[in-house]
Image 1 (cartoon, rainbow, N blue to C red):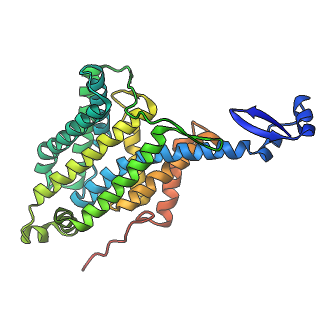
Image 2: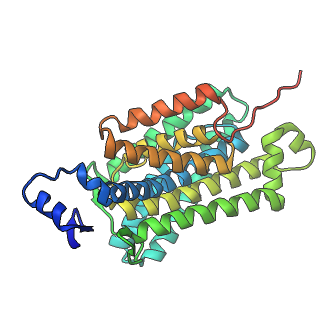
Image 3: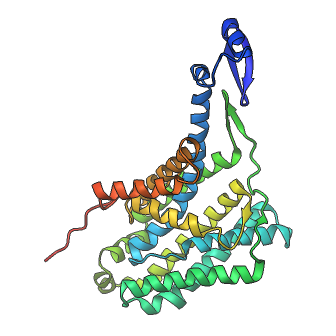
Length: 329
């Protein structure tokens, strides 16, 4: 047996197959029996998990706000952009360490989220859903325009805030960013589930999500509860922004636009209002997108993602883990 390296992977091959390969008779398709395609498939699956974890974090913010405030905060993706710029400014201009840069980003995004809720959304609490939706889109464009004025349209390079070394398992290389992203996402989802089901504030959020009027009669401060929900969602956006720039290394005024829409798709796919559903939807979306780019077409990957969403909603309109709402008459 001989050991050769193809596309960075070590492959054990017998002498006869080596002769075929050396003389150009052995096709790339024949090499699949030696595991090249399987290795590539696993690598794309890991890439999908990494991307899906970022989508899941964004989707958790969407699903928290919708589940409790019953509104779609389409400015959520742009808060991620603000978080990414905060890390860039903190590290480059202020000279802060990666950990302090992330901490500052979390504070900035949390304060921004609460401020947006208080100024833009709270006065519209009793307005029609369409009015709130248009306002959210307006806030999104406002944040993009402000970022464009301050930082310009060019992308800025951002150093990774994750210093963990890559881990090699067999022929598979797991980057530090991938490991941290997936781990952080799982921990945050578990903490959110415990927070919602085990704490007084979490139960207040559940009460507001079920019946806002009844929650007020029970003495729950609805405005404060919704503000805390926005604070949590914006905090998650800051974490997602930190993981995004660590994985992709750049930020521009439109960084959060398309990922924000895809995160909304992930929340709907998993069942908007469901925390495990947001996690599941994000992971599935990331894997589908990664596999589509690798094996079908990079140009069609977005279309495939939205096509899968349509198919799922045709079969299960409430999403994969969403619950059918029963209307009392």
